[in-house]
Image (tube, helix red, strand yellow):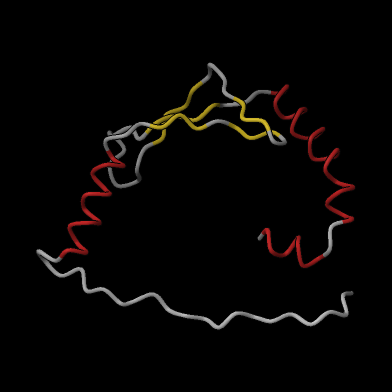
Amino acid sequence: MSNAFYKVPVAVNEPVLSYEPNSKERKIVKDAYASLKNTEVDIPMFIGSEKVYTNDKRAIHPPHDINHTLGSYSHGDETHVKKAIEAALTAKTAWEEMPWQERAAIF
């Protein structure tokens, strides 16, 4: 257990925006949504610190419009699972030795 003193920052809320029809805030959100909806992404797996792309791609769809494709992710197989387990076991000692505050900060 740590015996240090920690200073918790003062919480500050974001400004409350209205998003009413024809507002600047609503236009920004709608433009961002349109941009994201019209861009397809290719999502890799992360094994250790490595980005892993496979030829086995699976489509991703928004739940409210399953006929629209947002992009795809790389689907892994048994070899990827084994590599992920090896990477986790390799990182285990460093994780265990990391101070609890740093582990908690990750989450």
